[in-house]
Image 1 (cartoon, one colour):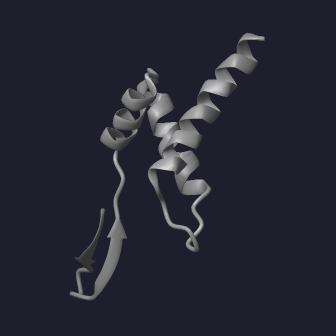
Image 2 (tube, rainbow, N blue to C red):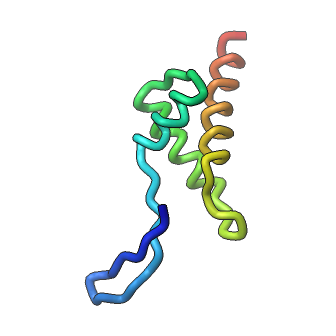
Length: 77
């Protein structure tokens, strides 16, 4: 998913873009339904836990989705 982009000054940099569609894909694989707000929260959780030593992977999204599911369970308890 990483690719080279260019600034307005034509300076190259690496970009690793992830989108809501990626969150939807992982939710489907996990047989989970999240609201739009929860899917956006997944992106925030993943971004906030980013570690440049490890990058981003599908596992990061699975863990973030599971955090949201676990949070729902705690709210219901």
